[in-house]
Amino acid sequence: MKNIWFVGDIHGEIRLLNRLLENIIMFRPERIVFVGDYIDRGPHSKEVVDRIMGMDVPVTCLMGNHEMMMLNAIEDLGYGMNPIELWYYNGGEATLQSFGSSSFFSFQSDLDTYYLDFFRSLRMSKVVSVDPKLKILVTHAGISPSIAVEEQVEMEDYKSLIHYLIKNRIDPGESFLWVRDAFFNSSPERWKGYLVVHGHTPVMKLKRFIESNRHTDYHFVENDLCIRREKASGKIVSIDIDSGSAISGRLSGVGFFVEGEDQPKPHIRMRSMTVSNEEIFPRDLGVITH
Image (cartoon, rainbow, N blue to C red; front, side, top):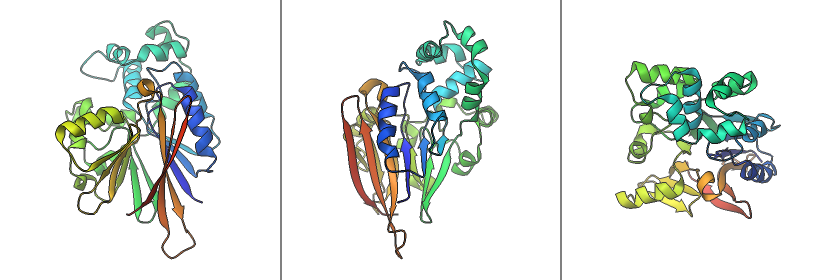
C-alpha cells in the first residue's frame, strides 16, 4: 500500500529517531520527508545526521531554522544579530560537542565536507502529491505571509533564501523557516490547494497560543500533533508535527496511506506514530477528505 511519512523536529535525539524509524519502516514507505531541525539542544546531532544519510528508504530532507543558524555562523551570511552568538544561544554548543569540537572555530575548520554538503543541500520546501487530488506542501515552520507561496516553492537552497530575504528586506524571523504567529493567524486561502505539514513550533507551545487567541479551527492530539481544519468544509489545511523532542522526550511522524488504489475512488487514510523512550503511540486518524 502506497504510504508517505513526514517526521518532525529531532534536535539530536537519536534514540527517539531510531525508535520512530523502526516503526515507520515496517509500513514500507515510499518516501520519508524530514521537516528539519536535526541538530542542537539534544546530545547526538552528528548521529542523527549519520542515521538519516545512511537510510535505504528514499528520503527528502528540509532545512530547519537551526541548520540555517549553523550555516549562517559558518558562512557568515546572516544579518542582524551576530550569527555565531545566535546559534550558540539556540543550542549550538550541543552540536559542537556531538561533532567532537571544543569551540566554534575548530568546528568550522574541521567539519568534514561530507556533512557540510548535507547541510548546504537541504531543501527549502517539498510538494508531495499523495494522489492527483491531494498535494502536501512540506515546510519547516509553515507559510510566511511575507513570501508568496509560489516563490517559496521555487526556492531551491539556503543561499537563495538568504539572498531573497536581503533583496526584499525581510527579517529572517518572518521566513518560512521561523514564522509562527503570523502563519497561525493567516487564512488558509493563502495556501489554497495545499495541505501544509510543518514542525518548528512545539505543539504544547502552539496550544497555549491557540487558547489565548481563541481559535476554534485547531484540534490537538494530546501534545503531539495539531490539526487545523477549514471551518466551512472541515478539510484539513495544516498539521503541526513537532512534539518538542528535546523538551518533551517525544518524537512524532504522520503518514498518508492510499487505500483502494485499484478502485474507482481510492481514499487517503492518515496515521501518526509518536514515540518516547519507553512507549509507542500509534494512531489511526481516519480517512481524510480532500
